[in-house]
Length: 335
Ligand code: TYM
Image (tube, rainbow, N blue to C red):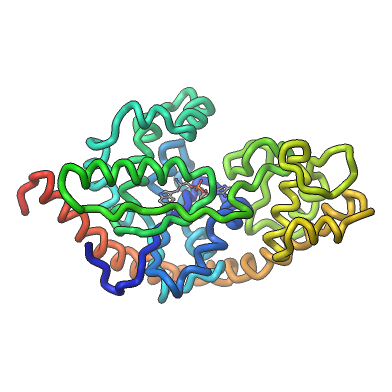
């Protein structure tokens, strides 16, 4: 298994299917920048995954470009990290097809994301939505990734990737590195502010529940002010009985690096009004430099293009080697 730099590898990605959310930042991207020195990191924009649900083409292009700028603004230095757009590296589709043939109908049927998404898009339950996890497995396995930093909702997809890799290796020998998920202790599942029993999601119809990374400060503050809590009027962590307050505590904890005991002490005797305002302010301050830097980077489209082109070249070299090995193993003749 080759690895030019001898550092351990990371691969992860986000779908540009909606504007980036506070959930994807706290669950995933925040950890990515921290790992850049220790690992050889590949971060992609999963545009091919987005068309499993209908997209407006111009919007998809706008969001993809904005997401490239946001990755960099979050601290992913394009010199140290390989940043690329999935559709620019054809090996993803190519290995995706091969892995489709090594992934079972039964295991795909058990994926909770497929069940959720097919229930939400009853008029478009397409084959891509069903085989999505095999494409995601290809994304990861092409790079021989050791670690996949994701939020809790993607754990099942990393697990099926491990199963597919082990199955393939069982037949053909040691072709793929079997990757580990990397899920943060706090922030792995940020919930909607308006219905804290469901995940904060970029495709949520209720705009008040979801905070976007590049949103204006006044809108962020307004959403936190409206956040659903409970009638106890006491800031304490209880995921089951107080999902709204516990979610806000998680967000505040990550933004301020304070643990739950310290947060409970800080707001003892205060009403929820003060607490919600403080969480809103902390999020605004966390996101402010990212928003400003994203806007600055977006002004120079040529520079962004140079970055994602260079990323696609670097990614293609690594991915091409794995694909070549796989083609040989399954019996395809060399061109
Ligand atoms: P996506 O685009 O839905 O989400 C991107 C990342 O953000 C995390 N995340 C959250 N974490 C905590 N709380 C939330 N409310 C929240 N919402 C999103 C997700 O867990 C994810 O880490 N299939 C993937 C994209 C993908 C991928 C890959 C990821 C495609 N290929 C290969 C890793 C490796 C997805 O739809 O994530």
